[in-house]
Image 1 (cartoon, rainbow, N blue to C red):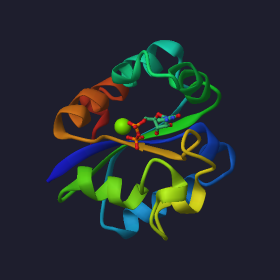
Image 2 (image 1 turned 30 degrees about the horizontal axis):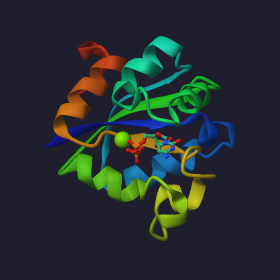
Image 3 (image 1 turned 60 degrees about the vertical axis):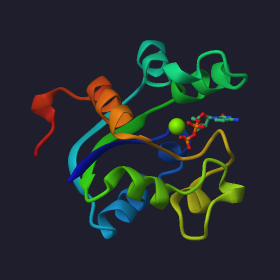
Length: 138
Ligand code: CDP
Ligand code: MG
């Protein structure tokens, strides 16, 4: 079993898509181990997106991710990391497969509804940014 970090980004939360998005993961057999409604500050956002520092879209990404509430979740399942990224769809909704969360709910390649970890190393690093061990119910 694998764990992954998912964020419902401010665009999707603002548009009341959270319930629909969570349903996609539960319908695919993923188990929720932790969940938190919160607002990211600059410090958490820059830690989470550290690998993107210096990219042309970085400042916009920081402003967007701190613009309103998000939901952070730890999901568990078989091949959860790859599986959740498949369920989310490609970064840009214009390129995402039909039925994926980003195809259904994302506005654009930057306001794209959800985040998910991309490797076991990222998952471990990102989960620790948002949750203490005692908040993960496994
Ligand atoms: O989120 P994902 O792993 O699919 O994509 P990424 O390439 O790791 O980029 C992280 C996030 O930065 C994206 O989800 C977008 O919100 C944002 N981004 C952007 O605004 N413009 C880009 N050209 C690339 C990424
Ligand atoms: Mg990424």
